[in-house]
Length: 288
Image (cartoon, rainbow, N blue to C red; front, top):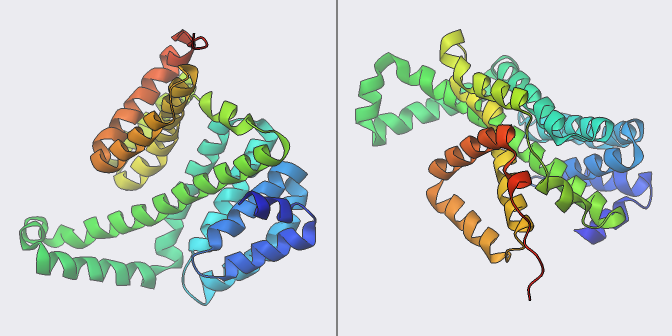
């Protein structure tokens, strides 16, 4: 991947070509988003937007003719977060911008792609009626509404997650080429401010109160806290000079425990926003 980043930064022709080709090829759209993010972070927003047009064309093609908004939404997510990160040097603000766009995406999907959502909803209804008849009967007429909200939130949330990952990949490419170790230091110190943490929590619980899609708000409000929780774990491991095997075990536990550990990370990130756990820890000295 480092070789690809080096090739991209040779000039606008290389960057635009890679972005356009990878966005046009199914399942490689994420590379195009990361490439545009790298250009924005290194060369500036105007240059990134100019080259981003090369990737927007195939992304719009998939969105319009293929009825698949994935490439377009992920590209816009990465461009927005990379622009905010370059302007403010704040991951907190970049994540908030991504979450805001995630809400907009969740609101626009039913309007722009009603047929796509209807097909997914009908497939979900048939699945529950055939394989989970008890749940289908208990929900009754609400089954379709619940599935529709779930599908809508899952799509918008997945696009947001991929966009955040591609922005981080672009930042790691930039650091690897021009500032070795910079992304590691930046990520290890990522922490939400108390006010933003409170806003994220309010967003997560405001759905039922406001009559909005609670699953969508859970995605967009919880993701900044979840990312901050991951940064907390990485920061503690780095501050204590622990082996990388601890991170391997942590991610294995994350896969095995799933939502339980995710919720714990969200809670820890909220607590850390007030207590700054890493600052209170004594760094480990060199081994004797």
